[in-house]
Amino acid sequence: MVFTKCAGWVDENGLELVSHGSEAFPAACYNENLQKLPVHWHWHEELEVVIISRGSAVFSVGGQQEIVNEGEGLFINSGAVHGAWLNNCGECRLHSIVFHPRLIYGCDNSIFKLKYLDPILHSPIEGLHLGGEGWQSAAITAIDRAWQSCSGGGFGSEFQVRAQLSELAVLMAQNLNLEWDEKTERKNRDSERVKAMVSYIEKNYSENLTLNMVAAAAAISKSECLRCFHDTLGIPPIQYLKSYRIKKAAQLIKTTDMKIGAIGEHCGFHDKSYFAITFSRYYGCTPREYRKQN
Image (cartoon, rainbow, N blue to C red; front, top):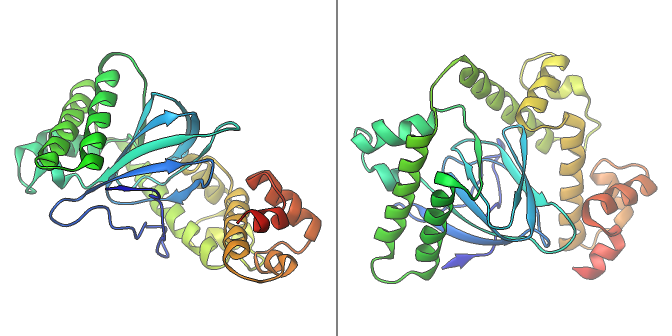
């Protein structure tokens, strides 16, 4: 079965609450249309692999931005904060598989985990852009075959999905220089700090937040707050706050009968003109037009 929406509700720390697959088979496949709905920043314990089937998308993973074009792929590591948006005007479709690594390695002390999965899970790599040459071409083929098996179902499909994802893990372990170092330790620390600050922003987005207040949520200085956001999400805290406010405003416009002005006020936009301009930059239409369309 193919689901149409991957990134769903998140908890207070940004951890995605969607259940990907089941305990018996911890994998699920998705078919997304970024033209209709971008994927806001979130994270999950599972691994994720993506192929762009049409158009072009901008992914932000761990502070790095990647433009992934039609026919290319992306690997997203466990715990990496990520999001995806339309790159240009027009349609952008992607298909992805989100899966727990135990689908491949089985038990915790297996050779499959120790030799192949642990070097990937504990590496500095948060996101990996997969092009169309060499071993990466083979990796894209493995992802596509796994997705086709997962979406098609049928007898034996679970074996086929596991086999293709195992092939992907072997290709990565064989071709990447995966070592744990101090940079990895720092990235993990920064990631935890950003998750705490993002949680604070999303709980208090309607308030008049300051940089000091956001930094205090992770018990760090303003300069360290700015550095952590830059290195992990690639944007300053104020831009994250603005994008989250617009996302919440869009939800309220779509699901409630609140007046547009009241929604803007609730989401921290006290100037109606500024709210309309900012909303248009994100959604390509005014708040009133968005309500009519939805």
